[in-house]
Image (cartoon, rainbow, N blue to C red):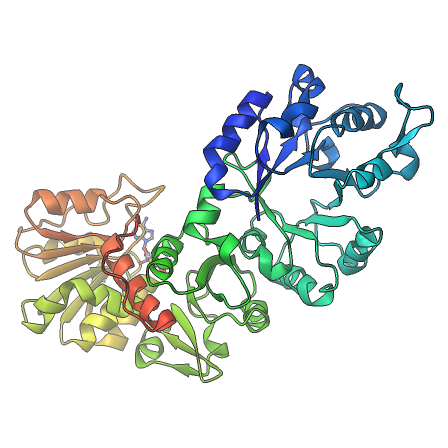
Length: 494
Ligand code: ATR
């Protein structure tokens, strides 16, 4: 179930949020602490005005909410509001039993909120928040919260891949507790939100405004990731990197899986330790994953098989399970070649200038070299250019000498980060003059048109943008993951 967190300041605003998201959600959480004081007074009517199960929550500031009232005042308002037709009421784990007894003019004796909720069939969510870590005794604490038949909810903050492993272990450690809610907050936790079912969580929260750290929108959760459709048979794929959330790969793979009716999900994993990730990959029976900076080299000790390209380039961007072994391939290599394959095979590209000598350049230079293209590498640091040139029998020079190579090559490839934020106004080779007849390949895809790209276009060159290579390498990964060609009718927004 996807639960929309409602943080509007009025009930009307929250009703609108429900309507905008209705197609993707199964329930919503009314956050009393975000309502203004007048609206709080009438919030008990909210569930009867929206046709969805509603969780009532009044979150204290110390638990990540906005309520700054005294505990007594807060619980009194919670008690009054809970008289409405809510499906669930959230009560924090440390609220004492005695603080949940209220005087009510309608009754002679004090009313016990917990008992009255249970009598009315309202489920109590017992919540625990930790914004600093994943507590060492998390399994014991969840069991304790569940001991009275309530729904335990733990929202904790994983700080490493090892913490993520602890959260995914909840499913096997506490499988007897059917209804529970588990959330990994913050950047590391996003995979636990997307794979909430694999953690054994009955629901996950989402919002349009990132109401809590790491929230994704209901639309992204449901339409892009289909997180609510994950079941025991779902094949899990992903991308590992650090950082990783800027990557466009989920927008390639998830719509592709859906189009071919393949029960699979592709999730970004923020990974600090590759070793820990391989442990998680076994636990979740991950079928395959993409690898991005800085792990393209680090994964290699864990691979049982690698291709010639991975060995040459020294980088692996695709890992798949083959006969109980991890196999590493490099689709950047073939993805780069795809848009210029015709020209290479017809020997229209015999010479190339490659700007940059970093990780991306290595795939490019090796791909060209292996296909008989004579390469000259230009790089800011001459030493790095020389190193790659020695391996690939290429020429090399510094960037300052770029003007010497004008009019001399069939292909120019730009592989540096110049042109991306924060260097989006810069051109790595401003004195290089395009003749207009060379093919120009700009690997930067964000922004789509760098100064280098624009200059080449104005000179009349055929210019290939980085998103083409990104898509091509993604299609090859998709084949390695699913065994099927990428559906030709899908045009991902990358
Ligand atoms: P990637 O994996 O994206 O290729 P990388 O391995 O860090 O990243 O390589 C970055 C490339 O961009 C290198 O060629 C780098 O040049 P140096 O080897 O001299 O560092 C180049 N680069 C980065 N910033 C640059 C700048 N401001 N001007 C020129 N080249 C730059």
